[in-house]
Image (cartoon, rainbow, N blue to C red; front, side, top):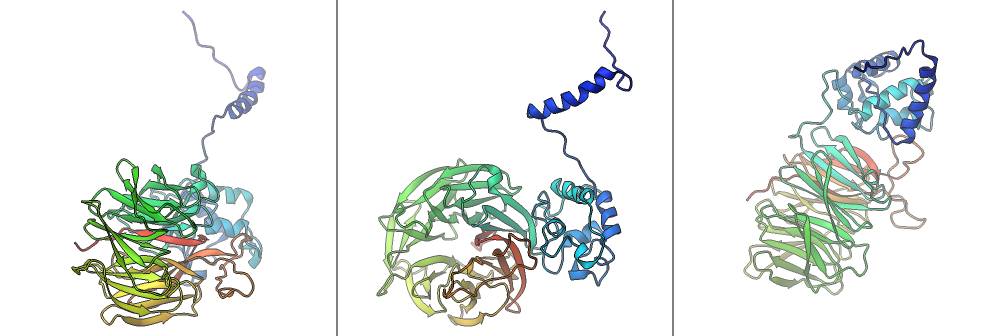
Length: 483
C-alpha cells in the first residue's frame, strides 16, 4: 500500500525554495491567479476614514454621499460615482489617479488615498461593486436602459434611465474589435432582452444580451442606422454617411440566426430607415436623391415616392408617431422637418414642410405623440416641434452641454428625451468652433468627452448633462409601441 507523501511546509527547506518557482512557472504557463475580492466593508472603512467628512448627509459635496452603499450608487448631482465592473472609467478612481489638480482629496489639503486603498477600491469595483449582501448596482432586469454609441472611443455607454447615470460601459476593444471600429447606432428589442450596434469601420453589426454579452455578429459594409421589425424577426441596417459609394442596398438580418441578405434598392447612398409599427413596411431614404423608398416585407416590392426640391435634401433620419399614422424626416442640407402621411392611398405622402434651424439630426416622437424633438447639429440647438400645430414650439440654445447634437431617444414613460452630443474639436474659423463642452474634471484625456443631455418634457428644459466617452452618436432604448 502506498502512503501519501506529507510535506512540512514550515520546515522543509527544499519545498520552501520550490514554491516561488512553481508560482512563476504557473504565470508563465498562462494560468490566471484568483482576483482579489474586496468587499463593501473594506471600501466603507476607507470612505469613513478619508471621505465622509465632506461626502455625507444632506449637504454632501456635489451631492455625492459616501456614507452608505445605497447613497454611493445614487451618484452625485452630475452623475455616477462608480461603474460596476469598470474601475478605470469610475469617477472615484479617476479623481484619485488622474485629476490634473492633484489626487483627490489631496488637492483640498486632505489626506490622499494610499496605493493600497486605491487597489481595494479598484478590486471592489471590478468585481461588480457589490453591497454587503452581494447586490450589484443596476442589475434589475426591469429597469429601462439607454444605449449610447461612443463613436470616437470604441465603446457603448449604458445609461440607467431611472437615475440618468451611466450604469455600465461596454469596451468593444476588449472583445477583439479595433480601436477605430466606430460604433454608430443602436437598436433595442422592445422587452430589452437584446441590443444591436453597427460598427462603421469594422464593417459589422453586433448582437448583445441585456447583460452585455456578445452573442452574434454579421458582416455589413459600412453599416449606419439600424431599425427593428417590432413584429417579425428582422433587423435592417442602412449605410453610413461616411461611405461615399456604399452598396445600393440595405442589410436584412434574421435576429434569431444572425444570417443576412441584401435588399437591392437601385438608390444611391441609402441612409435613413425605419419600420412601421407592424413591421410590414420599411422606409428608406437616400442621401443623394430626394426620394423615399418603401419596402414591403411580405411581397418584397419596392415603391418610390419623390420629394420635391431643387437640390438634395440629404435626409438624416425618420421618426413615426405612436399611432403609426405620421412620419417626420429631417434633412441636413435644406434644414427641413418633412411631415409624411403614412395612411395615404398615394403612398408616403408629404403633407407639410417645416423650416427649422440648420442641420436637424435624429428626430424622436414623444410617447404621447404631441412633440417631435431633435438636435440641430450645425447651430448647437435643440428644436421641439408641436405636432398638433406642425410648428416650432421651442428652441433650446446657449445651454452648457450642447455640443454638436446627434442622436435621440425617449424614456418609456415619456418624461425625458435624450440628445447625444459629439463634442468634437473644430478647426479655427469653423462655424462650430465654439460648440465645445468642457468636461467637469480635467483628467488629461477627456478634453472632448461626449455627452447626453436630458430634456424634461414637462418643463421643456435640460435638467442634466451626462458625460460619456468621446463622440456620442446614435442611441437606442426599448420603446413600447402602440399597435
